[in-house]
Image (cartoon, rainbow, N blue to C red; front, side):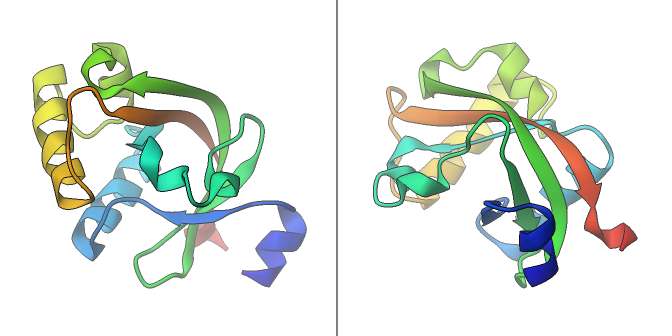
Length: 136
């Protein structure tokens, strides 16, 4: 991880999902080229604003055990209400084939992680993969 911080100064580290199985599945979607966006409840950044994605910054996506998996570079960040997420945004996450499927799965995710409200604000991040660390 220290080598990565030298190569990608200022990079933050995060995990996709809220459990090992989901994390592995989401990393696999990124590696397959299907997932090029992610979102999180805005409330998750209120106590740690430095963790908020920043356009142009590289960040390290970790496996559930904390080992580095991928380096991504943020290309776009939107603050949007859950109810206003478009089909295009939802499909960029690569997790579902429809907006309705995305809504159902994300409603369950947010309910598990602090509560759900259709009006809740999300931080929606688009990214490019810079490096797959499985190749190192």
